[in-house]
Length: 316
Image (cartoon, rainbow, N blue to C red):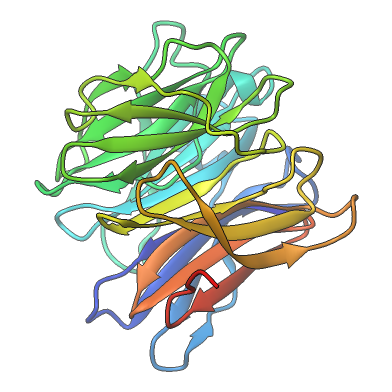
């Protein structure tokens, strides 16, 4: 089993163009699940063999408390070139009782060191999870989209400074059925987030901030079907945005790439994967590296697939 990949773009002069992380093991939530990683080498134009980089037993030994399962890694490079991993880690209970484990790699080839659980809740920091890529900020910091899932479900934006220090949290919606936000800036101050909706209507939802994430408001429904599944958005510049998503309400059997100029109206550009009604192509991630748009996603819950677009796909 393999699921929930995330892509991290590396600097132009680095031997590695791109890093990918995901969780893998004999089955989802299995006791042997670890966080896996691979790198795309610029010289060979090949992915390196996958290796495990986070083990729950070793992380628990450092933290001083047990971890039952790992999932949903999200990666980010800080202003000092260090790689941070944010991983959903559970103790007692299922995914809804997860916490966000923060790890850091101080230099290439070094092991990821657990720094602790993000301090997000008085209830032992439980039920906050991550999934989508962070939004880099001009000051070298970033905003990490996350969500609360125990009973009521709502998105939150976590702010970090250039050194990777947690600086605060803002709730993004007053609704109780939204999760897994992906951030799409339309300008330096105006950001849109698209969200998975847990209700029976099976639609994508949207919220907007006009002040660089300091406050948020819900937007009218987009009328975009979604089978209660994670999406990935990437804004290359104002007026040029991409979204990898499942466009059918009934299943995750089709994954597509769409484009937009405003993050609210989308045109399908490419079919990334297509199967029968029992198939699953899901949980995408995206990155812009070396003049190309890269997309990774889960393939049938057994592997991680990827595609590279150069030049960019355009509407037909």
